Length: 555
Image 1 (cartoon, rainbow, N blue to C red):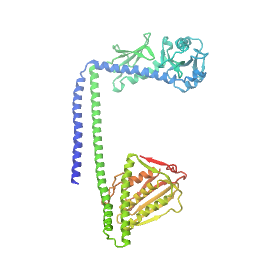
Image 2: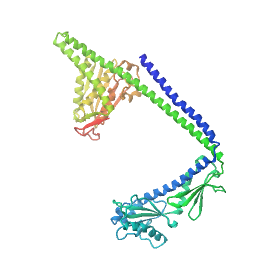
Image 3: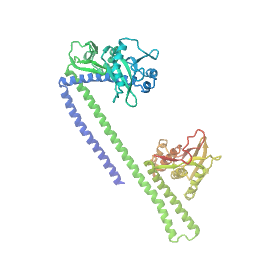
């Protein structure tokens, strides 16, 4: 035991060394980070310009994402509408799709007799109609012409993508080519971009998200976004420029390729920006250090938990060794007595044989528990489920216990159900093992009491097997934990009882594999009642464990 304690102490010291080795570089990193942040306070305006560039890039990317999403969402139509003559049904798709940002929606079939004839969707009537002649209709015909020519030549489009038609900026369009299964162009779905809505609603929202308002600066210190269309008209978003120079200009891109956006820097100086960045980055560094330290502490906690589990496994090995030695010693002693001829009468031979059989069964049950736990943890445990007589399974299990219990001075009482139970879908061997584990647990923790009672009853759609002892009992805080493997109840009396700590864990697994449950009612000094609930086969309200004759594998 002293060697084991020394090993645990050495393990704890190593754990603390690992913690120190992890925290030391973190402290050094914080020092270096602080020095770098101090230098950053005096950095050049290049960092400031890069920051404004990032804001501008965010605006450009957000505009493109918004309108690409609009086009992909609103214009994605199945090819069957165009090839099957069901183009009027496209109204159903347009009705279901959100098209916020589109002035009008239209479709054009490029096959059949109506090839090239646009149909415009009316959101009020939810129907399609041929557009009257107007500048808008002319723009559609001009945009469709090259696609119609391509379709007439049976051309294919390898990678269909959204196309922008902006030769007439007042009637800017997004087109989506529709292909059949062979990759042939069969139609177009399009929309007119609502430029006024873009300037009134879309752009202000994007700018509001992109500009660094969360840094808490005054409006006068905010950068300003300028939107400039192809004709040179400007729209300002943010604070008025106030004579400040443009610091970065970018082409807006999809679908406003003729537009440009510019950013005008705030009045706050680059040095003030550097000080602000210094404070922000220092706060982030401290937060990161806290996260790393928290991770180290969590690792330390996990290591401590693993050490506790190791101690539990060591106790398990010690207890199992004791449990194995006891029946083996008895078998060897009575076997030697038989070999040496010390059994002079047939009664003695029968008595020694019964004792050898009892201890063999005890040894077999312990080995089965260990093997079952290994199968459960590796996911190889399986059950042969079939309708069976539960009372017969329980009675057979009790027959194997009666002799050993009688020799230990225990009185085993059995109370059958008041009326015959219907068949229960179970694995008889597994349920018998579970009942045996409950009996073994009751015997071990009965203390000075020498009475165990087993009851079988029906409760609605459930068959219930109860095992009651009058022993030391279990504190309420341990009612759930007793079904964990290796767990030992935190009561002084329990340390005088040897056991593997596997029996109740296997009982719970058997119950859950049969779609049942295991419950315990107990309090210290008043004994315990363990109840194994199993669903009756075919009973109303019961969840079936499995089809008759089925095989169930459990992880």
